[in-house]
Amino acid sequence: MLATLHRAGMDALRKIGSGVTPTEAMFMAGRNNLMIRFLLRNGQRTGAVRNLTCLEVENRRNVKDVYIIQVNTHKTASKFVCQLVLDEKLNHDVDTWARGRKLFLREKVGEAVSNDLHKAFFCDCKGDFLFSNELSRITRSVIGGSVTQMRKAQYYLVNFHFCALLSKVIL
Image (cartoon, rainbow, N blue to C red; front, side):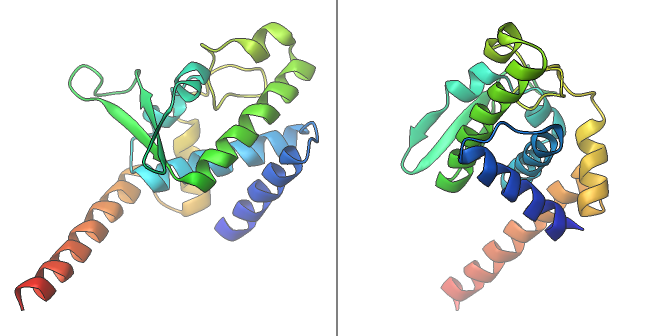
């Protein structure tokens, strides 16, 4: 299922990149593909991706071949900074999605919504923020597990590789 949805999302992004105004199905496939890739790449809670605004995406910084987005509204905002890191490919797809998002929303709900930088970057078909459980629902259906499990898997993967690397250096 993951491979099928990934292909559908990449196909939607490819069509959007060629200048096609997205249909609702393309809009959702491209959006869902990018949200899952953000979560897999960064290991953040869903709120960091769900609360991302167009302005935060527009203000991303390029630092040594990666792009960094600072998310201001997230669960631990009072104590921690939340940054989402994008490689060249993901950054390119974010730009593609931004153009497609604007075209889709302009046609669906009007110019004002499509140009509002304080709106959700990953929005519903009306330009509104997603419900708080929507991204969790998507990850459960696509990946088969919760975001918490996904975040723990990344932690264990990094820990495993670090320990393996450390044993090579010591031995």
